[in-house]
Length: 577
Image (tube, rainbow, N blue to C red):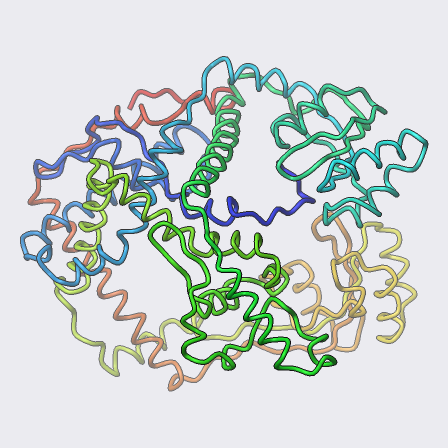
């Protein structure tokens, strides 16, 4: 559910990131060949899975992906050189692979149980598109139990104000601010049960309680109208597909985690928690005890045998009392930690804290590490690390820059080592040009300026500081800075048009540009020169190695990986390379 104003603390949300490794394609077409090695569409998709570039057109997407393919080709050249150097046999490589093995096991588990089960049909795309024709505005109240929801419906039908009831009863954290108003939204923005009910209502209608994983909702439809952003199907097809996939991903992930929770139930030793609560009660006087949270404990007060008490067990694992208290303190906000007497919540939290280990165990039981997908992923990871080691340790290292070179660079690039000019100003920013001119004429002192700033300025969070912008640089507010630099200290300047509004300001102080001292910069300059030298040495190696290698690229395959329909309404680029 979009629920900008509803927060769910759940095991699924906490564990979702664990199984969010990037997705690839199953394409085995060859994108490029490097000295006999075929870079496939699948390998390329895996390589770019974590990159989120904004593309303006099909040609722009092709150009950016073509540049990434060039990078992957260079990586392959380094990998081949690393094999020639015997880097694949280094213990360091094996340690790196072993340290990251779990994340690839989780990725394989995710692929098997979630990603491979996500499919979007043409019928689903067209159905979703048709539902985008309308937008609605709704308010809601969400509560955790049906009895309260039924009671609220009765109150609303009896004439009580919906917004006031949302303010009083809703468990949506934002209800205190918006009184349940969700604003306008289109299909796909809410959880299925909520939107199915809301989009089938008429303005003014109030729903019976609607159950979702967030609780019980009472929905009031405020308005329903044509969606002003409803475009052609081809223009939005790609975005719709992404939204449907995202919804299916969330649902499949939740179903899978429910199955894992059922398969690995947490057996809690409640006697251990009772003992801890008893010890806590006897440690402090009642007056002190009343001020202490009963979801935390001073670890220093546990002796060795107490620390090793087993608090919970599950298939293949266990957690000691000390382990739970230490990890809960480290990873969970105090408000989230369950009390020691809430056994169910403690068990749920233990599952959450150990979810990754449990999922890794499940992956091992399913023999994920012997699947072609896992072996390909782990091998590629191994080779990328080999390439990094080769680049760091096997490239020719240029000599360290001497004192003369450092000083020469400092003298030739003063702009890199100069603190920029700064101006301390107070400002009033308003949308009304007439008001800006009026204030500029009437304000005669800084004291008066501060009073007017507190009353009128529209710059966020600056009314409470009387419009004080402190010392600003030109890159932050270029129009205001230029005008203020030409205004004497102690005087008012403006109005200056800026981002659709008008700025008047009072200049308090100016600091001229200042060149930093060379001695304090030597280390920084040396590091930059070494970095530049290594970059140039690497570029030279690449050019030399490419000239000695056999490299071919199939751009038609790369074009085939691009959804040109996503740009159909704005892009006339053909796919002929």
